[in-house]
Amino acid sequence: MHLAWANDKFVSGVEMSNALDISRVAVWKHIKTLVNEGYDIESSPRGYGLATCRDLVRFSLERTTENILFSPSIDSTMDEARRLAREGVPHFTVVIAEQQTKGRGRLNRAWSSQKGGLWFTIILRPDLPPQLSFKVNFAASLCLAKTLNQLFNINAKVKWPNDILINNQKLVGLLSEMETRGDMISFVNVGIGINVNNQPEKEQPNAVSISTLLGQKVSRTKILAAFLDRFQRTLDNILERNIIELWKEQTATIGRQVRIETFKDHFQGLALDVDDTGALILMDEDHTTRRVIYGDCFY
Ligand code: BTN
Image (cartoon, rainbow, N blue to C red; front, side, top):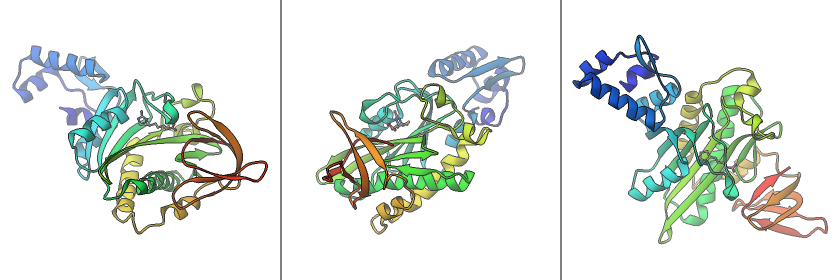
């Protein structure tokens, strides 16, 4: 039934009750459950149809290279991914939501996640010691910037630690959470929020969506498929790759005056470099340098 919907169809109650061998009342009860789960279901004389998220439903049903789990509405894909990772789901399980009610950003900030954006978390179980997990995060932002540049011929740049900007406006935010077991990573969850066909500009003046930038709606599943393929390939031999050097080729952070915010502090200076552990090297006014290992960075 989902697949019929994914194919842009209205499906009548009779068709559903015949296909599923259940009564019309039972069909109606299932439809009500789906509506309560957050699906936008339209009823018309032709039957029931999916009003939004048809593209993501179809993607989650058809894509076979990863385990894809789709929800129309969820608290946060980070929270769901953590629950699932603790239950033992396999490497490269992707949790996608059309809408998040408690989307989270770095430093515990709220992340607005309206319909039309692309909000997902990838559960990864890389064969890496925890101190090398930074490679996974930098690889994710690098792969995504390259994917967006290739698909849309834009000039997206990565910003330390993991944002993607276009003309200094935020297109993508990335958040990662890790749990370890002994001296190995149990899971690292990489959460990605891409402003695609939503309008973040109303709520976050310094953010922009791809559709605003290009003046037209774009395909979310095209972005997702191209990114997941590229990221999979990169992860396959992540130990051998010098991710930081490659990331530096795509960044506009180095050489800029920046302001850094952490949970308790903020400071500013000249971004001199990103070292081979992913830390930002900052020089302040009196020429003292410091290594910044986490925080949010503003130009
Ligand atoms: C940031 O720039 O502060 C990071 C934003 C990360 C947002 C994504 S959207 C998908 C995933 N689920 C969340 O609650 N957050 C991340």
